[in-house]
View 1 (cartoon, one colour):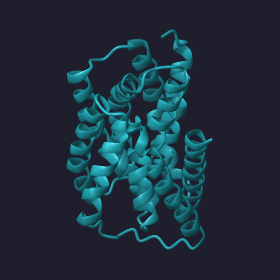
View 2 (view 1 turned 120 degrees about the vertical axis):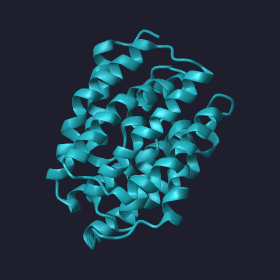
View 3 (view 1 turned 135 degrees about the vertical axis):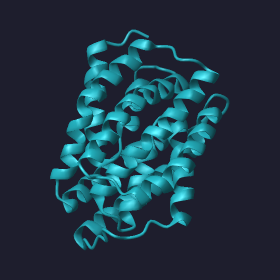
Length: 249
C-alpha cells in the first residue's frame, strides 16, 4: 500500500495531540484514515496499536510527571483493559467486528450528550472514589472494542468516567497512562497471530505521535475542566454521528 510517509507522520501527530489532550481519538482518527485509503481492518488496527505502544508510553509518562494521574483509576483499569484488548485482537483476526459498531456509536453518542449537559452544570468531584464495579467492565469493554475497532479505549473509558463526575484532567491522564498496557497486549496478540506488515504505516504514525505526546499532556493541564468537557462532548457527538451516517447512509 503506497501511502505518503510524511502524510502518515502528520496524521500521527494530529491524532496524538487530540488524544493526549482530550483522552481519546488517536485510534479512531488514525484507523479511520487507514481504512479510508484501503488498508485491511486487522492490518490497520495492528499498525495503529503498535505505534500506540510508543506514543502512549511517552504520553502516559508526561501525564504522570505533570500530576494528571489518579492511581485508583489506573489500578482499576489496567488488568481488565489488557484482558479485553487481548480478546478483541484475537476476535478481529477471525470475526468481522463491524456488526457491533452501531451499538457502540449509539452508546457513545448518549455519553457525549451527557458530558455536554454536565459541562454546563459542572460539579466534578476530584476525590470521587472510582468503583471497581464500574472500572472492571469498563476496562474490559474499552479494551475489547479498542482492538476490534482500531480505537475505542479513550472514547469509551474517558467518556464514561467524565460523564460520571470524575475530574477531566486526572481522568484523561489516567486513561492515557493505562492505555500503554492495553496497546502493548493488543500489539503482542496481533504480532503472534498476523505479524506486522506495512512497516511504513507503523513508523509514520509512531514518529508523528511521539513528537506530539508531551504537548497533549501539557494542554490537558492548561485547559479548564469545563472547556475540556465541552470539547470532548462535541468531539464524541460528531464522531458518532459520522459513524452512524457511514453505517446507515
